[in-house]
Amino acid sequence: MVDRGEFFRQVTLRICSSLQIDVALSRAFEYLQGFLPLDEMFLDILDADLGADRRIATVVRGVTLPPKPIIPLPDGIWAWIAEKRTPFIMDVTDQHARALGHLVKLEGNSDLVVPLRIEENRIGHLVLRVYGEGRYTSEHTDLLAFVAEPFAIALANALAHESVVTFRDILLDDNRFLKKELLSRAGDEIIGGNSGLRNVMEMAGQVAPLGNTVLLLGETGTGKELIANAIHAMSPRKDGPFIKVNCGAIPESLIDSELFGHEKGAFTGAVMERRGRFERSSGGTIFLDEVGELPLQAQVRLLRVLQNREIERVGGNKTISVDIRVIVATHRNLESMVSEHRFREDLWFRLNVYPIIVPPLRQRRDDVPALTRHFVAGKSRELGIAIPPAIAPGALDRLMNYDWPGNVRELENLVERELIRYQGGQLRFDALLAAGRDGDAAPLPQEGSLQQTVQLDEVICRHICETLKVTEGKIHGPGGAAELLGIKANTLRARMDKLGIRYGRQKG
Image (cartoon, rainbow, N blue to C red; front, side, top):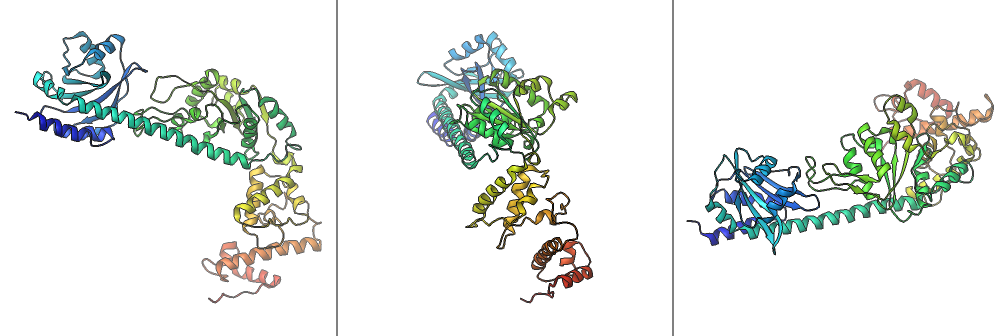
């Protein structure tokens, strides 16, 4: 004979022991096994928005499993379940039970269903399953009716906790994104907007207030993200988020989840629903960089966003409207990719309504001095250099005459490298010569002139001295300066003698 008072107390202690509902259900499962046949146990909610049964916790023979997919319910079955108020055994002789049994794979098993209510409001149900037919009796239903209330309370608490956590994560998520984007936006500046980029900025100013999709074309490192940011800043959406997505940096297996989000249980590891980048961008602008890297399946979904401003999360079937502006960028030739069947033609036509071509740095050399000064000032602050160094006479000419295959990004990296090596004096940007690019650099004094020889000797001398500092004066052998410089030790010594560099191991 079961002591129902003790039974109620023990079940309540276990099912209310954790806000992690799968943990609490597992503990209750272990206890209930001592009182009735039990192989599996589920906790479901009736989702009125979806018209479906949504499983939020599953325990199979004591092991917690990820929730199974949502089960859509026909209207007749929905009404039949909603009317049930007391525990019942799924009897395949009932037409509704037969239809539902097919959906939940009841065949060959016995199910005992416990409706869960809070103040007369049906919130879900507990399902107990044992393998084999006809295994449950009215005694079992009476016993479970006794603990329906603690299960209902536990389910309600878990749902409330899930909502709080979800909304907290949404707020934190939005806060992180907005802070990141606002901080980057605050430091952004369009250098060359009145010179080399004048045409680009005029086109950006024309399209910014309109809200239509914009395609930015240009080589890597030309500053397409800055142009996208400027379009957003000049648009009516300027107070909304500006979310950047590098399509080439996201693994193909994760691209749909990152862009469109996923529902809880959509795949292994999806322990709660997650909003994608499109939902995060609502009310603002999403910038899809390197859009040519999107896999074909993601291109299909992007086309739907552009046409209808609607998305569906992975694992969901509910349409979500998004109020966004889309700006895309690529360094690839999308038209050629279309002919090679690597990019959808209908998506190409949709994107190519208002293309803006961002010219490479070699086509706007007059912007190089202003960009260089801008990067020297900014990188000096980052590196803690109180007073930005001056730029040596002639250095800007050399920079302007270099072809910059890496565009603005390469110039920025060169400035940062020069400041890291800075030990006083003026910035000469001799790294262009040290890298073996003197053929591409600005015209230097005529070949064979004394001035050229002195400049080259200074560069070589400085480079050797810096290498010797690293090796603490060691010239030959493993880790020596000759090995690091890729020359023979005797050749290095001869060069040092010519330049007047003293050598010998440093003593500590």
